[in-house]
Image (cartoon, rainbow, N blue to C red; front, side):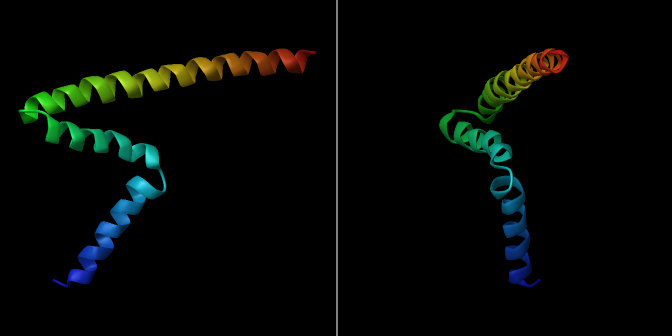
Length: 81
């Protein structure tokens, strides 16, 4: 197998996850950091799921929904006037 082909695949995956949408890379960066810092893999993955997946991502979605709802109400009110 040609090593250049592997380099192109790795480069493409890097572009997809980190260059074009940097927000998608941060959860995985935190997973790598937790895996390095924690004593066991299970503790690291548990902390990652709780702190990153459940807390930061879900909370960000809820905050975005609230801001979108308020913005929609303000725009509808502005259109009436």
